[in-house]
Image (cartoon, rainbow, N blue to C red; front, side, top):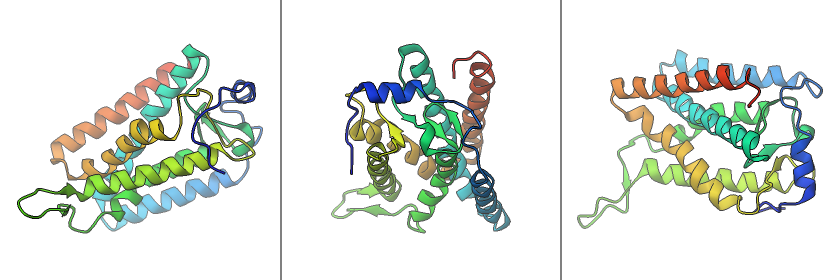
Length: 222
């Protein structure tokens, strides 16, 4: 069952209010297995010296964390975040809108998107008769964003409320446009930046993530 918009229901609000962030009540050993898989993927790419895939993974994952931090801040100050995960659907909730399993998936999503692009990343679709066409990087970003938005729609409709949308104006379309498109634009374009610009982007991105986490978590905001 797909759910396309939040319903503003009391049930959704109650589920969000019951979220136990960073509680170990549901913790189990799948946490370690998933972490091992992520380490294996990254170290395999490093061993093969496929550093562009690593850049893609880190670029998207950093954007993911910035979004999750922003979502938690919105929840703190407005009462409810744009999206949430339920206690019943996970072994560990990192922030109000992201659980361990989801976050680890996003740590790999950039690598997956990068590998789905043609080997020649300068390829452009519909380029003929003097038209420049559309970059394969943009096409794959849009395809991946649409796929992830539809998966989130499914999660929002699950019986255990894996994903919770409270606001009636928040749903598949804003998720697709404002969240997932930027995610996959980062993974698809950052690897091909000039080395200095790429390094600067990743350092600023992850430096900001670290600064926000060490500031906002002790402050009780996220």
